[in-house]
Image (cartoon, one colour):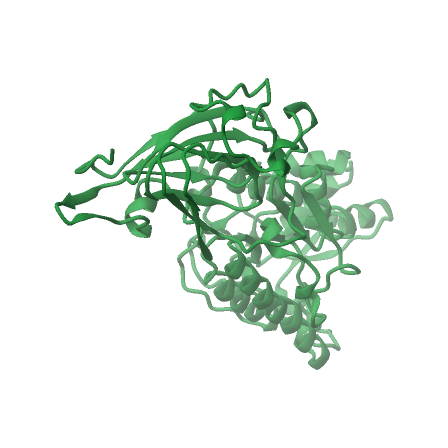
Amino acid sequence: MTKYGKALSVTETTIPGLVVFDLPVHGDARGWFKENWQREKMTALGLPDFGPVQNNISFNDAVGTTRGIHAEPWDKWVSVATGRIFGAWVDLREGPSFGAVYTTELDPSKAIFVPRGVGNSYQTLEPDTAYTYLVNDHWSPDASYSFLNLADETAAIAWPIPLDEVEISPKDLAHPRLADVTPIPPKKILVVGANGQLGRALRAEYGDASHIEYADRSSLDLATPGWEQSRRWRDYGTIINAAAYTKVDLAETADGRRDAWAANVTGVATLARIAAENGITLVHVSSDYVFDGTSDLPYREDDPICPLGVYGQTKAAGDAIVATVPRHYIVRTSWVIGEGNNFVRTMASLAERGIDPKVVDDQIGRLTFTEDIARGIRHLLDTGAAYGVYNLTGTGEPQTWADIARHVFKLNGHEPARITGVSTDQYYASATSPVAPRPRNSILDLTKIEANAFAPTDSVTRLAHYLQA
């Protein structure tokens, strides 16, 4: 019998992410009314904002009708419209909770949120029972499903009505035992730009896990029209955009400006649309170049942007687009050093070859190593940090490029005094091709990401390790 007057509340279960809701049902002599799903109230109690796209109803006219244990690659919100059911849920996802079982009865005053990959089965306890379920994906023959036999001995579900006395389809009777079940893998993580400096660091961070997909420019080029049709995006939970046009000086030319906007804005806009339409978390890497560098203080995440050149303008535009995605992380960084050719490698080479370079000494910031950016991105995702913008650089005393060059010389056993500091204007005075304006202050405030329990690495310490590798 339906219970009236309960407060809206949540009960956790033995299966991670599977939660039971008590629903207020208001009844009188005419019947009853309830809010079956109310986004604002239920997300406030911790229900994921799962974005349902379809509402289904299952009607069962006889007591004991039993539906097989099916695990689908989408989330479900299940509730009873009339009658009463016994429900059994078995975790069929990859991971430590695989095989965990939870059972309960549902009537119109209860509902349950079933996360993707958790198998669900229902047995009717009253005639003319109907239950409804909201799902956040459309059925597809290309999706990955998993099934478990209703009589599996490991799950050992205590069905109220014995299975040999109820109506079950032949197909459900033929499902495999738990030992033969194919687990539902996690939603995929797609790393775009996987062969770049940051992409290679993300490969090292995530390794060869089956749900991680790496796409380099040959397989996914954000500047090539039509690439968005290449995947079933509902199978993805996260996109990490490590691709970007970063040739800051070339971006000041006609061809470079076109290419920079294509990769950093047009391609990013398509990623953002895909993420928003499919409930995907989008991680986007930004730059100190969105600021003009005139501040006397480290730049905070909420400081007004004011890019100086084309590259900075495209990054700022990309940031603004990504910020419209409901689930997004914008990771703003500076002075990036990773695998491949870069400032540090160049200085080390000049030191070894006996060349005494002139290096800019009126720009100030901190080195950021791609290993730390990859580690920070994974931390934000794994901890479920609040969506938004996060500064992420190395820590320690800010330095000029000339300071860093001297430190590279010293660490490699060469005389730091061989470095001559010059102003930015002096350094580029003889340039014959366009030069992008640089922010003089590239120091980013790290308070926000440190408050989220991430500890960036001291840039000087990381530099020493980098040169020893």
